[in-house]
Amino acid sequence: MTTLFDSIQIGGLQLPNRAVLAPMTRVSAESDGLANELMRDYYTSFAQGEFGLLITEGTYTDEAFSQGYLNQPGLANEAQRDSWKPIVEAVHAEGSRMFAQLMHGGAQTQGNRFQQRTVGPSTVQPAGKQLSFYGGEGEYPVPDEMTEDEIQQVIAGFAHAARHAKDAGFDGVELHGANGYLLHEFISAEFNQRSDRWGGDIEGRLSLPLAVIEAVRREVGNDFIVGMRLSQGMVTDATLKWDGGVEGARTRFITLARAGLDFLHVTEGDASAPAFEEGGPSLSAIARECVDIPVIGNGSIATGEQANRLLEKGEMDMVAIGKAALANHDWPLRVRNDEDMTRFNFEMFIPMATLSNEKAWRQDNQEPSSLN
Ligand SMILES: Cc1cc2nc3c(=O)[nH]c(=O)nc-3n(C[C@H](O)[C@H](O)[C@H](O)COP(=O)(O)O)c2cc1C
Image 1: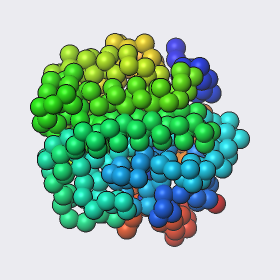
Image 2: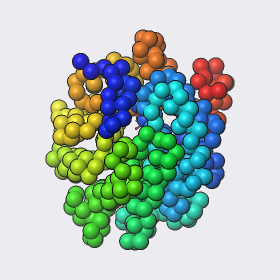
Image 3: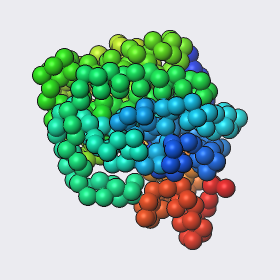
Image 4: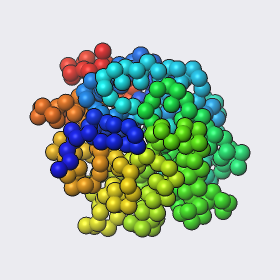
């Protein structure tokens, strides 16, 4: 029976266990997108807590439209690349592996220091209000429909950033195709209303993520790990479902995996809930059944029992932990030692989800701190 503490291989990379830190934006980089010491201490604490794999927060890929949040870190230039090196080194020294999540903000962009306007596949405005805990305010702007040149710039940006990730020492990259950001918007029937080769039916809507995978693969070679994160819901609309039901999901997973991915990362509000019909399979179970690369599952997994149950049932190969990891930077260690978990408290994000706020909140509340 598979458990959390069994090792696993992704591509040629051996991981010590199946506990993954989910990617989480913390808007705590320098204003020019450089990663800093506070981030190093933050990521190192999860490695010390025995997460076998850390996935970074969404990291922007170019100096055009990809930056989604002010104080988001980047991998768009050499200075940003170099700023990640001490972080990756410190995480490796603790025995964990680390992937960079590469992200283009698309229409959900709310803070970009290079551009005033936002872009997306079509002029579809995201619902709801910008996220105040990332410094946003008011409605999202209506994005401009991307031109062919701008699409080519996106593809080149992902490839370039993946090269920077490899040169910074990361073990792999995760392409962010989830949560409503640009690659997800291109896949989405709601957001992609294009009639050119980048839109139309599901095959057309997968064209941009496919082009990105191919360009990244060409840039980093076959030995570097490349995966993709996918979700149905978006930051701006958690209720969205993929068109095509289970079959549509299979088409997405199979087509993307075949393009050269080493893993898929599937996130839902509740990782164990049926993806479509009552009583049907979860989204990660659908993925796992139709591809032969490892599947990371994520969504409301808080305890070791939950994680082990999902692994034992074969719903996923690895579990990614988000909020429960913020509450317990040493989540895997606590599972192993059968220790109580601290409950996640959203107050650590008030007024913003920064690392310095987390640190101050921990001091004020005498919450055990794993941040130095
Ligand atoms: C503060 C915060 C920041 C997040 N930032 C990202 C991100 O940068 N990239 C991403 O793919 N998901 C991001 N997410 C989503 C998480 O990776 C995860 O999918 C979500 O929290 C659900 O998992 P959980 O129930 O284990 O927390 C973020 C979530 C939180 C709470």
